[in-house]
Length: 212
Image 1 (tube, rainbow, N blue to C red):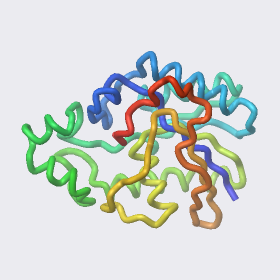
Image 2: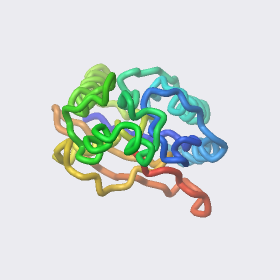
Image 3: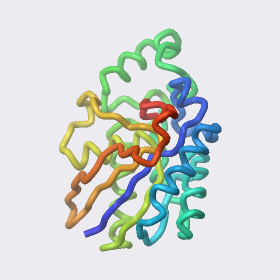
C-alpha cells in the first residue's frame, strides 16, 4: 500500500480574487508563503520518501518551503499541473459570464467534455492526473509520498477515491495549504482525511476555496 499526503499550494492574489489561474504562472502572495511555512511545520515530524510537485510556480514555491524544512528531495511532476482552462484563465466567473457566456454556462454545468477553447476537457484532465499519480505510485510502491499540487487536481483525486462523477456538484472544501491523505492499493483509492487545517493559524484566512 502507498500512502499519499497531497497538499494544495498556498494562496495567491488570484486565489483571493477568485480568478481562474489554470496554467498561468501566478506566484504565492504573503499569506501563501506564511501558509507554506505553517504546512512545513505541521508535517515536520512525519516520514516521507520524497516530495513531488507541479512545476507551476505557486505549487513549486510551496513545495520548496516544505521540502527544505523536512530535508527531503523535491522532484517536479508536470502531470500534477492544474487543468488548462483555455479562455477561462485570468478571469473571474462574473467576468466570464460577460465575455464568454457559453463557456460560463458549461463551466457551471461541469460539462466534462467541454475544453473552453484551447484548454483540457475535465475528462482529459482527470485521466492525465490519475495516470501521472498512478505512474508515480508504481515506481514508488509501498512508500509514503508528499505531493504538492492544485485544487483541480485534488478535486479529481477526491472524486476518484469516493466514486463521484466528474459532473457532480462539488460540496466539499479545498482550502489553500489544506492537507489531504489517501491510500492506494492494487489500483484502488481510499480517502483517509480531507482538508486538514490544524497547522494553519485560525486567525488567518485559509484562502480561496475556488479549485482553479
